[in-house]
Amino acid sequence: MKILVGIKRVVDYNVRIRVKSDGSGVDTDGVKMSINPFDEIALEEALRIREAGQADEVIVVSLGGSACQQQLRTGLAMGADRAIQIDSDENQQPLTVARAFLKIAEKEQAGLVLLGKQAIDDDNSQTAQMMAALWDRPQATFASGMTLTGDTVNVVREVDAGLETIEVDLPAVISVDLRLNEPRFVKLPDIMKAKRKPLEVITMDELGVARENDLTVSHYAPPPSREKGIMVEDTAQLVAELKTRGLV
Amino acid sequence: MSKTLIIAEHDGQNLNSSTAKCASCATAIGQEFDIIVMGASINEIASQAAAIDGTGSVLSIDAEHLANPLAANHASEVVAVAGGYSHILGPSTTYGRDLMPRIAALLGVNQVSDISAVEGAHQFKRPIYAGNAIVEVQAPESVKLVATVRVASWKSAGNTGSATVEARSASSTASSHTRYVGLQSGGGERPDLQSAARVISGGRALASEENFELIYSLADLIGAGTGASRAAVDAGYCPNDMQVGQTGKIIAPNLYIAFGISGAIQHITGIKDAGTIVAVNKDVDAPIFEVADIGLAADLFSVIPEMKQLLS
Image (cartoon, rainbow over all chains, first blue to last red; front, side, top):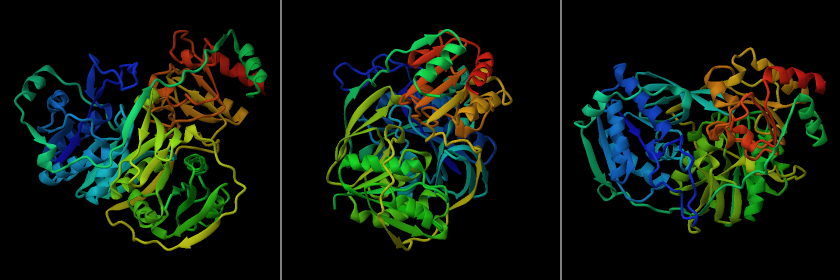
């Protein structure tokens, strides 16, 4: 079985982003870029499944300009077997990404697709669900546990009410949550080895995918800031303050 | 056909407050709206939905295979009735976030996630980058609008209405590829975190599952819900459904008290809309004090017992 893992190049999660003063976007010049942390967890899970002998090949795929090859190389260094860059200079929206990933999944006859539950830049949380819908296959979102047995996966999902368990038949699309695993660190020899692993570039035209019904995003603004608060000296003052404000 | 459909969320017993919040968003969009309730034995839930102010009618689809919130089953039902609507709204809870993109893709449209404000029938505001930027999103008017509503940004609509309930039969059968196994609920009898007026939260500094009893006992004293930082959940001090933040729950209680939470941006994004934020932390330089309305640099292990004494 082949596992397809989607990877998005995003501003590193430790970076405090800044909105450009003209409101045209977020400043990414000279900012550290990384694999979306949830996608890294998805890749780690795929590698563990392969290492357990339940998959033959792990393919990482990313949609973006040539810069995202850097994140694909990191994925290869972590242990993916090969990489595919779907070349596109534009910032594509989830429906388009889902369509493009589906083309790859069909071409590769992937048995399992693992994606992060959301990208930490757009916070959309859509691509996995959309891909599953277009594929007419099961989705299991927000996975914090998964067990593969034959052609089914038992998935524990982190939902608002607690931990929900569902069972899905393969092929399936699973989006992963933070507590599923802890991704491995990349070692230097692996980075060298990754340079020799295959990285294929394919265009949106070759896949026959075009953007459609896009949303227009504009007027980037920093969030309204809260008024500066006060510091109290001790618990008695704190409780008095809460009482004065009618909060307790 | 300028009409909105709201997807009701419930736990099989009661309507979730997210539905009345979606109704406020629908009212801001300025169109008539209906509510669709899917489940098994849902008469009571359908009448709760019918009471939401402004509701045109409630479509009640009662079928055994809809009892559990499986997106594959629920999406088919929504798509079957979508023809009569220009807008389809669901909550930005895990239920809505799971379901709505499946509906959007089946309808061939992009989705607007987490509407925090309405600027026009197809123009919205939403947060990105964990709430560190707000953007304006214009959706194409030629196609249906599918969106999730950021529930923390909206107040519940009133419940004095009496809309009609139309019972409809399910248009699809159970999906064969996805099966519901069960739910392990972490929550007890405390107020629901997402709708509680007061929330008491604990962080890594609590240092153990046993110490979280301090958080629970103070919460019970003032009738609060309980929350936690990611670090506390990761460490196993409390269940995952208590996590507040970018990847947990986004909440907007009147009062939020954080004990021993440093205040990573991912946590702050979950509490930005709270009325009053109180932070208690030993570390006077903890970033949580930057957003706190009332801060106290002190040891939570002495502050909580003192608070309990002063409040009881």
